[in-house]
Amino acid sequence: MDPSHEQQLVSSKPADRISNLEGAVIGLISNGKENTVPFFDRVESILRNEYGVSEVVRRIKKNYSAPAEVELMQEAMGWDAVLSGVGD
Amino acid sequence: MNLTSSRISTTDFAAAQEFYHSNGWTDGLPIIPPTPELVSASLGWALLPPEHLVGIEPVRERSITAEKLAVNAVMAGCLPEHFPLVVTAFTAMLQPQFLLHGATASTGGCAVLLIVNGPIRRELEMVATFNALGNTDRASAAVGRAIRLGLINLLDVRPGGIDRSTLGHPGKFSYCLAEDEENSPWPSLAEERLGESDVSAVTAVAAMAPRQIMNEWTSEPEQICDTISAEIRANQLHYSIWAGNYVVVLPTQLRQHFSDAGWSKADIQKCVFDRARVRRGSWNQVGKGSVVKDRADREYLAMETPEDLMIVAAGGPAGGFAQIIPPWLGTKSRATTVAVGACVDCEVP
Image (cartoon, rainbow over all chains, first blue to last red):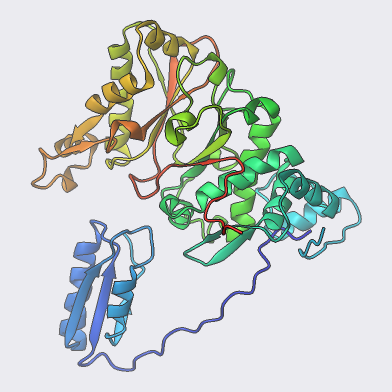
């Protein structure tokens, strides 16, 4: 017998890409680990100074081993793009 | 019995091995081909219909059914009478506080430690004395292995896939321990955690590898606590500083010293709780000075409460040893105890 889950995976597709960062609102979701601070500081600096984003929203997940909480995901709906999934 | 898993046809035992290995369905060791007859026998023993929902892994919304779990248990070498322990273990692992996805995906590389209590240990002839955390008996080996095969096949926890462990440890093959209740002066772990006596239960812990200690040169309980606490402090400094569920496996010899002095498990928990704490500044001595910052005097407890230290009586009759099993990562995952046959989140008919 097949020991695998054999379940239909829910299909999904990546969000639409944005073509231009100029004036965009970009979210940075950190997992809260120590080394993400200087890393995202640098990312924010590049986004603002080299790509002209209008706003960078910095958020930290409550638990770095669990998915972002619902409230955070809802807030992210208001951003043009989000950078996440980066640990230390 | 209406089994719905896809059927696989192979010419013989050896071909079955190659087929299962080639599909990434094993842990690298040979498996028992899970025939419908063997799977049905496991389900029958546990009185579970194939479609019984053991639980849902919430992050990936993956349901775990009794049939699929039984297939993996058979592959691991479980006999039908072992299967209730596998079901109970997965029930515990699927409780939200266990954070199964995080624990099995983390670079930290923990395994799922099962601690078995109650009459079922005797029924399954589980061995809690000599070599307690090594190769002991059929039930311990097979049940522990069934957990890993279940994670691999039902949740895709394969190295490099969902499993992002940097190193892992050997307990990821099988990590199942029975408590030596017959030779223990204290209530069992399950009795402590469930408040019920003589109950068969499984405690699941997201656990790192055991760290062995030795102190054969004292009979003073406080001094034994000192040795245990020193190892926990070492883990706090060398691995993770955060408080969590530590397990102490206490074999007969050291247990006897505590017992002779009239100490209960609670006395040991309190003694270790008071000693197992470090200041952040101690990171300066172990190469982690860069993260001490301005918090050198901040104190970190190894456990949030004394009860977070889980004392398990197990091990051979001679030797002043004990083993400390640290948590995966603080309280991200909480040790979870479930009674065998308990209905968790069931709908009342």
